[in-house]
Length: 210
Image (tube, rainbow, N blue to C red):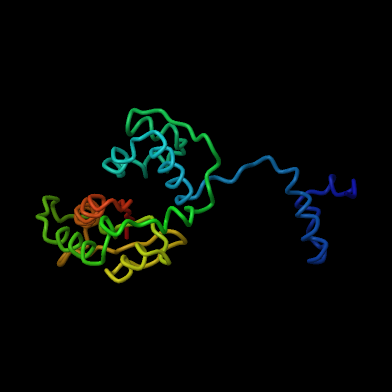
């Protein structure tokens, strides 16, 4: 490696041609100590893996609404799991970039999650009574599921109305007739999530303000 590259700074890159800039930026990354923060998906995936390893995944799903505030505060996934479930856990192996293909394609004919079961869970969620008052703020809510659209489960979810959001994840946007309140939409989404979790599908509620 050219020792002169060690003395370069990002400011010194200005004015260089694109080829030189690309090469020098590649070398400069070797001297960078700042780590990029986890994305929302990476954080959720790490937290899910910790919960499964600790045997408290159902408890985590039941209190999934508490994840977003902790994630936004920058609380590490291990600490977030301890605060939510009271159980300490640490990963014993590196997290895979995406769910293993064998695990995602594994399905038992007797316990298989079919399109009919998914639609029934959605219908039950929409028919469940709502107790949240219809009020501001306005916003959106949706059901998020960890599933690859190419798997048997992913294809069933797609046929039931889910759409691909990001690689390895699918979502179903929730609507409540006559209102745009985010709280009441979140309650509707939670009813659907309860039905999905009962089927053994990893699902949770996500939302944002309008």
